[in-house]
Image (tube, rainbow, N blue to C red):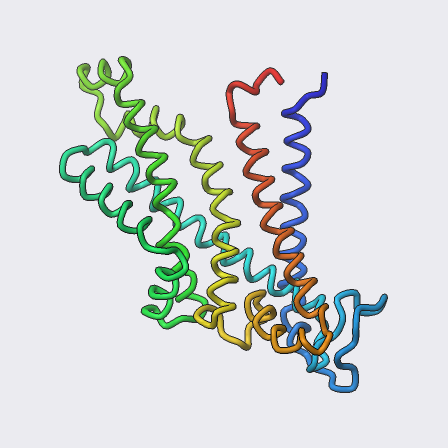
Length: 272
């Protein structure tokens, strides 16, 4: 019988290694991605340039890796901030109850009721667009689903007999939260954190593609795809195909990581 947990751990390790390699390679190629060479432009993919050359003589492989690295960094920052907000509000909502629960639940419903892209654009414009504008927009719109999950888990734990008995014995809520609730929430929280990454990356790329995110001088995936639209009708298909495929691959890799992490942290799979 195959060891599912061992296989999941191996896949998780190689996925993390690949994403780290993309991030480091993209960071190292950030200057190369902006270099122009008008003597070599509009070249289709070849062994020397696997992703081809654009209309300004820029290497599309370097630009794609730099864009993916930037998207991963934005996704990582926004996912961590969003997950922290979700954990804080979800636990406060469940432990406090009363008007605090009603207020935070209303806020969750309000944020989830507004289309994601529209809300990200509005927050990005309010924060001046650019790197910090799109980061704030994505971070402040991706926490409600995880917060609702955390709230439900904490409410279920608070209804357990051991929790009620601990409260009657005088154990503070802070101690219960630190010693019992947070360790129990860790598997769901880590899985939710990883699964925030693909959503954050896609929404950052989407907002940038629409012109409300990262500035045009940045080699972001959204910028690359937006610029390539004007050249698709001239037969330069490689300008959009390869960046788009690599973006989908990175998003799928993060989704795979979340699924494998959920399998590793699930108690029911301990004997698999």
